[in-house]
Amino acid sequence: MARSPDASNRVRADRRNGPPGCRPTAGLARIFIILRATLVFARLAPEILMDQPRRRRASAALGPARVWHYARAALALITGVAFLVGGFAVFRVWSAVHTISPRAQPADLITLVHAQKDEPGSLAWKIKHEERINILLLGYGGPGHDGPYLTDSIMLLSIRPAMREAIMISLPRDLWVKIPALPRNGYLMGKLNNAYAIGTDHKNYPNVRSDWKTDTGGGDLAAATVSQVTGQPIDYWVGVDFKAFRDVVNALGGVRIDVPTALDDPYFPAGESTGRMHIRIAAGWQQFDGERALAYARSRETTSDFDRSRRQQLVMLAVRQRVLSLNAIPRMLSLLSALQDNVRTNLRPGDMQQLADLAGRIQDQDIHRVAIDTSNLLRSGYSSSGQYILQPLDPTYIALHRYVAMALPDRVTVAARVPFQLQDGSRRYWLPYGIGTPASIMTALLQPEGWTAMLGPASPRLLARTEIRDGSGGSAAATVAWLQGYFDGALVVTVPAPTSGPAVTVVLGSDFTLKTFPAPSRR
Image 1: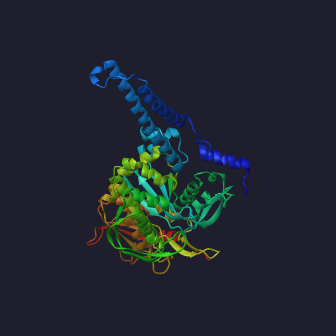
Image 2: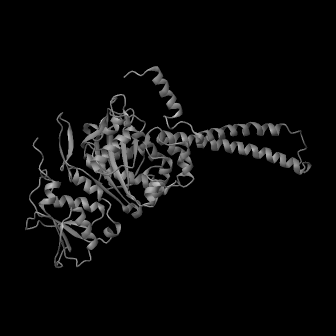
Image 3: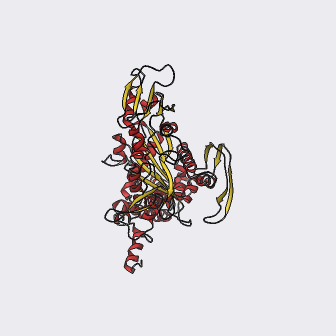
């Protein structure tokens, strides 16, 4: 669509001044006042010194008044230099912060040195009131890559501040979803990784809803789409391109990762769109620079998208560990330089500070990791246009919503480490060949949350309603209550303590299996 000259002028003005609502305010004006005062100090101090009559060099010849006069001039010079350096640093920090976070206001910089007000809806409010915080993390190629804004990495980071616990849930890019991109609640059908691109590329998607025609439209649309998929409100999002990822890792001096399985990929792309290179990464502790860490996170030709999701989680944890282990102040400007042109977020500066403080209080062992894929709640297929896609086994998404909603159970209950087993008690379900049974899938999903879950033998008796058989004598009451909530009002039956094995058993009845693993529609 051709742009009018007036529109072009407005665009150029917005680039200079920021988008409407983000233009220089009193906060930014103060920065410019500092810079002007700096120049005045720097100009006047030498004149004060040069205007003094020549005196004898011996310090004894100078009276106290003259010594003070020279000292005052020197202080003026030092102050001028300090204002110049400080003013430049503040301006540079503001410029970088506003580029990264288009919604930021100059006054937000104050929250970097003063406590953020805990206004309703703010991150400080959520932390104070122990509300769950959901942050969407997005990784994409960026300019110069094929499909520059298609998100290769889509990860939901969910935090419970009171428990100082978090879970990273990776979602596959090929998940076929409704993207709420169009006006009047209209949507586009597409892969999940298209949402950020549709909200970012206004030239190729000119008819999107006005909500997405902003500097943060890509992340906002991706967040709205992921919210539909997971059933969770997305509070914040961060989008990072490959260059920022490489530069941040390098600015941190590299990261160390305990590689669980060796990686050998002779087909990894050598350039932006052509060429191949062979990457080999041995198992065990390895040191990664930015380029190698990116290759480790992106490789999939000899493994799968799902293996890649798990590697991306390892890399994210390694970056976090490195940031927390360093004194970040000396590296601040190099980190800002790495981030400025290649990161976007709706987090404001005060939120970033609060989030960094919160992250520092969460231990590595309290960050759980899971990937939603074809080994649990999804199946593969093809769209009407022939694209390879993934779809939920439960087309209503209720099973996925329930899992994500309960993905951070009470830490005290989990820490009790009450063992329980899951058994198949129904044959009324549908699963792709070879991926297991309902009981094996649920066992694999609950273990990453910290539960001591194990797969038991199939029940000899088929059940219409799921049962929780409690032989703990009441000692596992909290665990049983959580299981009853997760399995949608399962019947709790008190039984004698078993002679061997777990005291608690969950037998999955057809009420659960038919809803979670239904047969695909024949439409």
